[in-house]
Structures are given as C-alpha cells and as structure tokens.
Length: 222
Image 1 (cartoon, rainbow, N blue to C red):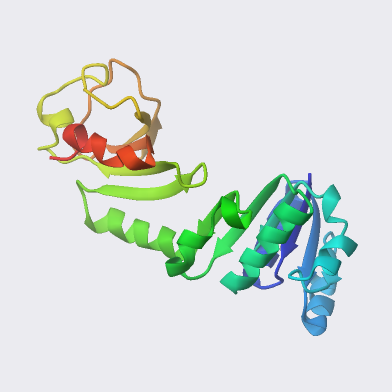
Image 2 (cartoon, one colour):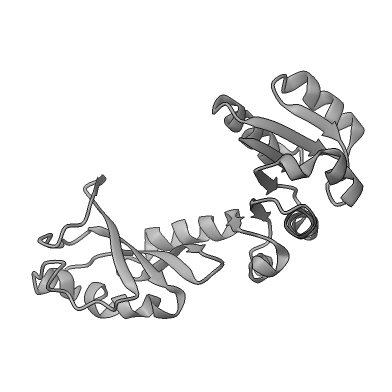
C-alpha cells in the first residue's frame, strides 16, 4: 500500500518507521529543508520529500493520485485540515487520517473536511483517565463512521443490573442500535455469547449509534 505522511515530527517519524516495517511504500513530506535532510539520513526506506503539504502543487508533485492513504500528522490542526481537504477533494485519496492536536478542534475533523478517521491524542488520554477513575460510567473510546457511531466502554460495578440480576446477554434488553462487541475479564478478552453472564469488574465494550449511547445505561450502569 502506498502511504503519504505529512509532517516530519516525532509522530510522522514513528508512523513512517512502523509502516515501513509492515512493508508499505511510504512518502514523507516535510517543509523544513534542514529537517528533511536529516530525516533522509535516518529513514533510509522512506521517500522523504521537502515540500509544504498544504500546497496543491506539492501534493501533485508527490503524485497523490497514486496514494492509498494520506496521514495528516503535523502539529498544527489548521494544516492537517487543509491537507485532508486537498487530499480528498482534489486528489480523491480513498482514505484520509488526520491528527488532532487540540481536542477543542475535534468537531471540525469530519467528512466536510475530507477526514475519514480523526485521531485525537488528547481525547484518548482523557478517556484513559476517565476509565481509571470513573468505574461504572460510560466512557467514549472512539467515534466511528464520521461520528455516526461510537465505541464505548463500561466497567461494571456490583450494582449494575447486568451483574445484580445475573442475566445473560440474550436476556438483557438492549436497543437495536447498541451491540456488545467484546468483554475484558481479568485482563483477558472474551467474545460475547448469548449465554454469557456478566461479573463485577468486567470491561464491556459496546458499539452504539451516537445518539443511542445512553441506551446501554439501563443494563450496564448501576
């Protein structure tokens, strides 16, 4: 797979190395000539190009129409949005992934800006903190399908109806827009089965329609 990464910072470098290890063809665009030259000596299997990824001409010269995935990984949210929009609208890149640096800008990173997948490190860290301190609460892990779906986690308490009433998954009354996709018990992932019963401290991972995330509360939050 051919992948173009915009931004030669620590994030772009790490992604480049990982993708090369996975046998992908990687092009890395970095606008600072000195940084780009340094990267060429470090990343021997990566095609490092000195270019401003926010400019149409730079993307055209990088032959973006042959790229399968674009990753906008700069440290500037405005740049990442411009790169995403150009990649999708002007070059028809099939998959565009964008880094969010400031979680307050998360609402912008959607289909209207050409973003297929938005990755917010601040939001992820916040969710991990929430997970550590808010047992029994619904924690948003990730938005999917341009924000229409959400992946959520609930750590069950003894008072959660699913635990207290000792009901199987089939016996729980869940909305049609909510699905249990995994259960982590004693640090072991489990595939949910209809006969499964839930225990205190189970981590239940659910996929829900964004407007229905609260529907799982009646079964999993006590």
